[in-house]
Image (cartoon, rainbow, N blue to C red; front, side):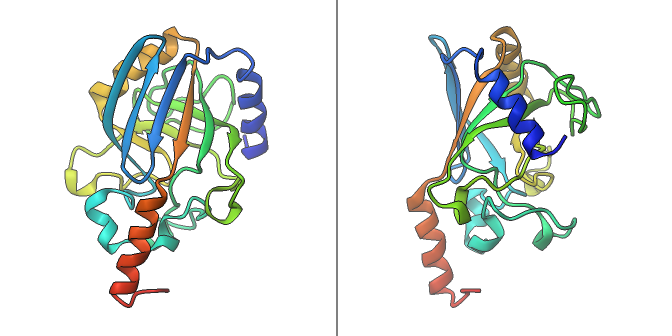
Length: 204
């Protein structure tokens, strides 16, 4: 299913998902937190966008490579997709095994066991070039590499989260009939990325 199809599913679920079930993802601080009713969780470490937003890699990351509008064109590092676009997403109420397809979409395959499918609901559009509705879909919350040096290497925008945290989150999402996910981008961190590029004469 393409992006418009996923948007349709997100719009439909948005009518029924409990607004007390909210997950927050700070895309540049690499933190995931939130609450299910009165139960709060996190912050947990999570990455998106080929690990380019992982703090220790920011020094060598160009803003153009990280942008949410950057699509995947290949498997090389320079061809990987950017971070998940900012705004509101729906986490569908199902726990997927590796290779399994969401019953709500009929297309796509979960990258790892204990994956959660994400569909767009209302993405930010104040700056389309940075975080607008980039027509990018196919995102999951799924497993990260156990090798810390490769953390995020399998993400083209998906949110990668550790197994223990992912299992806890998946059970809450399933029991709660889904959840809201809000992705936001720290403007201060973006400015720091740009300042580092200027300092290193690496503007393009």
